Amino acid sequence: MSKKGGANFQDLLPVMAEKLGGEGLIKELCNGFEVLMDKEKGVITLESLRRNSWLLGVRDMAEEELLSMMREGDLDGDGALNQMEFCVLMFRLSPDLMQHSLYWLQLALENEF
Image 1 (cartoon, rainbow, N blue to C red):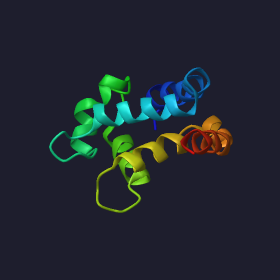
Image 2 (cartoon, one colour; image 1 turned 45 degrees about the horizontal axis):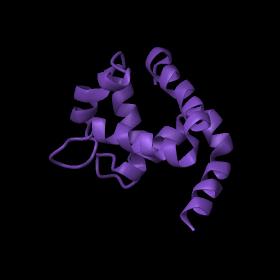
Image 3 (spheres, rainbow, N blue to C red; image 1 turned 45 degrees about the vertical axis):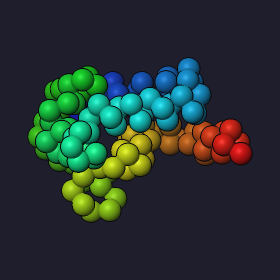
């Protein structure tokens, strides 16, 4: 991921987590998924990522970076990102959030039960 496009987004996730809490962060990630997804297919495709990434401030990503992001996030190998794959990818791309992910998971589980 490019320094220009990726670093800004990565840096915002810990700030968002701090401000919104675990549940709020997940809600915002879900909103991001909705923005990027192909409305007909209900998943993020390479084409929908190309078309909509500028809405999230990552318009300067090269084609190679978009492909890399899709490959890294596509856990089931279907060539697209479902909502869960997208959220996991966003956490993986944010080293600060990865360090605190257990805390956020525990907080979310406590709020759920």
